[in-house]
Length: 457
Image 1 (cartoon, rainbow, N blue to C red):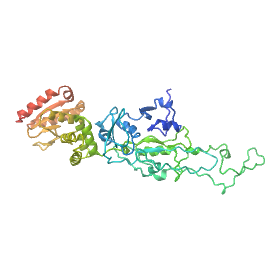
Image 2 (cartoon, rainbow, N blue to C red):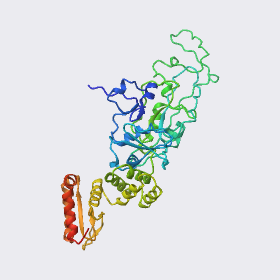
Image 3 (cartoon, one colour):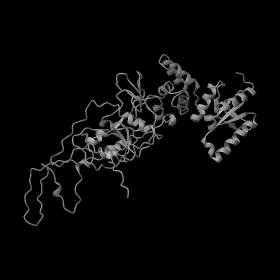
Image 4 (cartoon, helix red, strand yellow):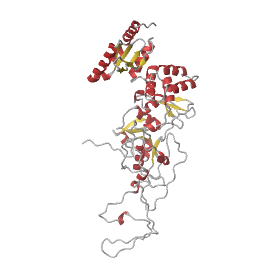
């Protein structure tokens, strides 16, 4: 039978730094080469069960972000829910202060800017803190975490108490554990309040115990009883900052990482530094939607940029007033004129990136700008919304995408468009194949239909 990949539960479903995980003994360099892990960036690995999408690439890049940096442009748009904004193989776009020292590298496009991110993360990372190994003496209070730990890209462990109890439903994050659900480790017994009792193993006279010990020992228990749990697995000690690796994995699950429950079987190293794992998508630092739209319009080619801005408008993440304001505010910056031109082409009525591309290409070909999803009320009272329409000329163009493979959907679309034809509209079809391979001929057909209804260039 094939052997199941060996994954410590503290690293399950996580994105982490390999050097820190190796130093803590959670994994070895040899095990990192197994099918359980995937190498995303230098020294950054992830559970291979995670989807290889741009969100995963953003989580990996977040572990390299200096303070004040944020994911930007199409990467930020994707984190806001625009799924077509970027793919796994696309570069992660980052806006970073000029003084941060971050530079572009393979898979990471750094834009030096003075713009400050408008939406700092509520929790940039989860910290896994190793637990001291058991000792015969009472456990001393551990040293607190370094006070100079910054919020971005890492937050101190004490900040986990302020994590939101529920992440946005669109992200699918797991709920945060209730405060009273945190397990408290048993405290060592006070030697001054209890007298060790002698044990009788052979039935002879009991021998006195060594009173120098301050607490019960494993051999003091009855042989038939299960052995006591290792102190490294008993849970956090409230108020002292010592947290079980398994419990911290649960806190990481509250930031949107699922399946991290359980206890690691690998031992940890006493006194080691914390290990940082990447935050969930909703907690990653990113620029606000209007700024992300401006960056996308400046950095990407127009056909792709307009489709992303269309989606930001359609989802209500930004509006035309915000786009106008940021366009005016950055008018003197490089790309300011280009951004205003892209904003002028945007339309929240577009339902898909191909519809946005078709609309922009028709405008660039010299045709008048169509209206996306213009409502057309028929005499029967039925209201239809063709994909692209020129209401003054009663001409419409309908993009036929992959949904046309559904026979039932094809039947409904054809019936709807026939109603438009009966109402005196000219309806042209634009299959995806023609958009890619026969667009000049499609443009001539639309030009002829508009000219027949009185349009003149």
